[in-house]
Image (cartoon, rainbow, N blue to C red; front, side, top):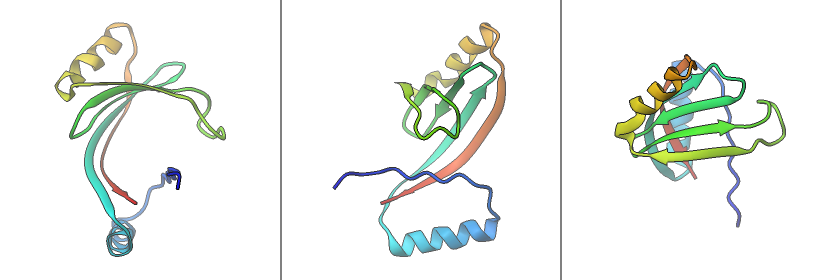
Length: 108
């Protein structure tokens, strides 16, 4: 059986989050929990850096946000070098426009 990723992004209340988390904990297999810091840059493309518990990455999502699919280009590196990567982009004139911090729960 193929794995198909379904990603839903939405702002929800703390109560709704706890309700959903309880449901998934009872009805599915938790694969992992990961803390992430994602920085979005003010470029003409969807360019981001991210640090997680295990690594850091630079990635570019081509196309528009509501396209049926988008190509992703990713480079992974040591999480300790996250700040250096951000400094490189800032040095060439790209500023961080959004900083996103989240605890990500992944279920099967």
